[in-house]
Amino acid sequence: MIGEHVPSSDLDRCLNLVHRRAGCRLCADACPVDAISLEHPAPILDTETCVACGVCVAVCPTDVFGEEDRTEPTLLRAVSLYAPDELGVVCVRRTNPREAPVPTATVVTHRSCLGSLDMGDLLKLSDQGNRPIVLDDTLCEECPIGSAHTVITTTADSVNALLGNPKTILLASETAGTSGVREIIDGAHPHFTRRALFGLVRDRAAELADRDPVGSVPSSRARLLAHLPMVDEMETGQVPFADVRIDPDACTACGACVQFCPTDALMMPPGDEDFAISFLPASCLDCGICAVACPDSAVSFGDRIEGLNNVRTLVAGALAACESCETPTVSKVGADGRILCTWCRHGAGAVRPLHDEAGLFDDLLGRLDD
Image (cartoon, rainbow, N blue to C red; front, side, top):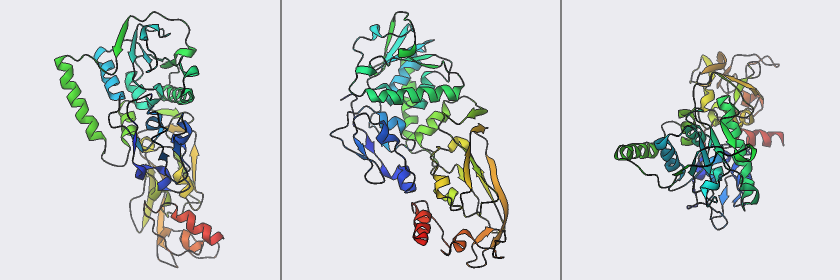
């Protein structure tokens, strides 16, 4: 066992249950001991094989996996209590933290794999990019779960991309020289003053409240956004957000992209006379389900986000009643001279999807094609 607690799972949160063609494999691909299988749409965790490293908890964008007593919040509180100018982080396998080959005078010990630190954790550790962090990954090469190093590297690169600074989160294996560790912070059992203890109780209450946050944004994403400084523009390549676009000539206002969006990043108020689909990048998980669900291939993705917290309209237009089923659809005359909704054009009749009807459109159209 690397960590202390095998994670629990809430399969209803899995993207593969939102749409059967979601194809999310993040947890299974990241697990260093192959304890997660995807024989069914949702992941199945083999608790006998699991080593409690916490990597699946960190990589899942919808918080399918969770730990009864996640160690990371205690580590973060310990660092905020001491507030060093720079910090090295060592994993549970570093038996003597003073020997950590990091160029920082202060290190904090983590009682789990460094792969269990998600983007929100690293943002808070770095004080929104104001504190350089060095992750001691020098033991990964000979570690039994050394494949988790890929997760550590990817998470560090993503945080640096978000902050626009490639030198905020560094890896000890890529950093030359050491300064000699002088102070060690116990990330599992920090010494709290009376004042800090009250802060601990307050933070713990906030954590419990965040387990089921208002709205559909997962708590891990809410934590990431809470510690992310204001960012006006960013490239989409290394960040967990997407620049969703909708082709106005192809969109029929069927609402499939909105219905299947797992976080309500896409929104379309109901109406019979006109429609507008808007998008909030900060809520987007970059899961791609909107493009998979769209029956008219109207959804695509750009490579740059401008205004992460700004809602913008992607497409808008007038609606008219479908001449076959009277479902409101985009007011466009088709090649046959009639106004028909997507489903009647495909010969399927009116379809009104719900969130939990995973893959309904794809299944229905697939049967028609057959």
